[in-house]
Length: 58
Image (cartoon, rainbow, N blue to C red; front, side, top):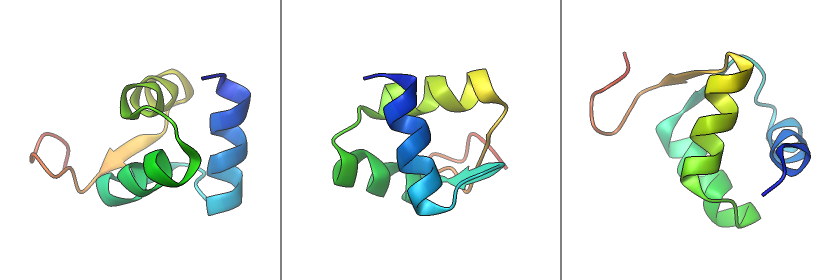
């Protein structure tokens, strides 16, 4: 998956500086993007992951 496609999905969903786990999972399913690709994109672009379903990020 290209980072441009993820950036477009985030823009369409209003994601700018942070994302909640539920949102990441929903975007993954809606736009057919691997969750791992979303996490890599977030890490590379300084987007914080909040409300982690595993309790990893607070």
